[in-house]
Image (cartoon, rainbow over all chains, first blue to last red; front, side, top):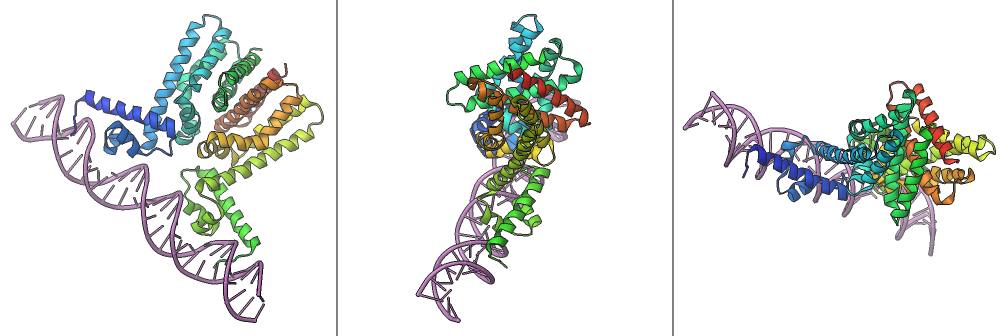
Length: 192
Length: 192
DNA sequence: CACGATACATACACTGAGTATGTAAAACCA
DNA sequence: TGGTTTTACATACTCAGTGTATGTATCGTG
C-alpha cells in the first residue's frame, strides 16, 4: 500500500538509511543483503531501489552521513579549543580519533568504505568533511604549502589506523592513552 | 585429463595464484569471478576449489605472497643500511613505502585485503612479515616499550595512506619526495 | 476529475559462489 | 603386476542475492 506524500517518502528513505547503517556497521557490507535491510526497515527491495541507485549507492549514503557526523564532532571540539592554531589542531585531531573510534563508524568508514566506494572516491568524501578542516588547521599552524597535502594524508592515515588499533586491543582506555600520546608526537613533528 | 604428480599439482596451484594475483590487482576482489581466474589459468573452478578453500582463501594466499615480497624488500634495504639503528629504521620505512607503492601490491594489500580478510586477520598477516621488523627497529632505535605498539600502528597507517596518496597524484615523483620528507619528520618525532 | 508523476510492491532474469558427484591418472601395496 | 586407495582435477547442480522490468495505488495538478 504505497503512500505517496513527500514527507512519507522521505521517512521511508530515512528508515532504510537507518536500517542499512545498523546492518552494515554490525555485519559488514558483503554480509548484508538488501533483503535484510528492506525487512528490518519494513519495506521491500523495490523501495530501496527507488530511493538509492544500488547497494553501493545505499552504502555511500550511509557512509556520507556518518562521515558528516564525525566531522561535526571534530569542528565542535576545535571551536571549543580557542584561538591558538596549534592548540586547535591538536584538539581537532584528538576529537577525530575519539569520534571515529566510537561504535558504528569505525569498521564501516575505515575498512569497508574504501573497498566499496573505491579509495579515490572515499578520499574525496573525506576531503569534503574532515579533510578540509585538517588541512586548514595544519596551514594555520604553520605547515608549509608544499608539504601540506602529504602531511594531511600521512596524519590522516595514522589516525585511522590508530582507531582500528585501539578497537582491537582487549582493554580500551590504556591503548587510547597511548595512541593519543603518540599522535601528539606526530603532530608536534609537523610544527617545526 | 587430470595429471597427478605432486610437481604438476604444485604447478597448477601456482598458475592459479598468478592468475588470481593479476586479476585481483587489476580489477579488485569483488569484480573478479573465480570463473575468470580459472579461465586465465587454463583450468576449471574445480581445480581452484581443490587447492584453496574458497574465494577469500585464494585471496588470502595472494595477499600473503605479496606481503612477503614487500617484507623481503624492506629487510634487504635495512640490512644494506648498516649498523646504526636510527638509520636502519629510516631505511626500512622508506623501502616499505617504495615497495608498497609499486604496482600490484597497493590496492590489493591496502584496500581490498582489510575488507576481505577482516582488519584483525590482515593485521596479523602484516605483523608476521613487515610488522615484526618495524617494531624491532623502533625498539632498537630507542622507543620505549609502553608506546611501542601504538607507535608501530600509527607509523604503519601513515605509510599505507602515503602509498595510496602518492598513487593518486597526477605526477608521481614530486609527491613521492613530499611523502618521504613528511615520513622522516614522523620517524624523527619518535626518537625523542 | 481525468491525467501524469511519484512511491512503492511484485515478479523475473541472470550471475556467481559453493557443493556434490564423477573420473582418470598416479601412488601404494600384496 | 594386478587390484585398491588416494590425489587432482572436471562436470553438474543448487541456491542466494543483485539488478531490472513491470504492475499498481496514491498524490499533486491543471
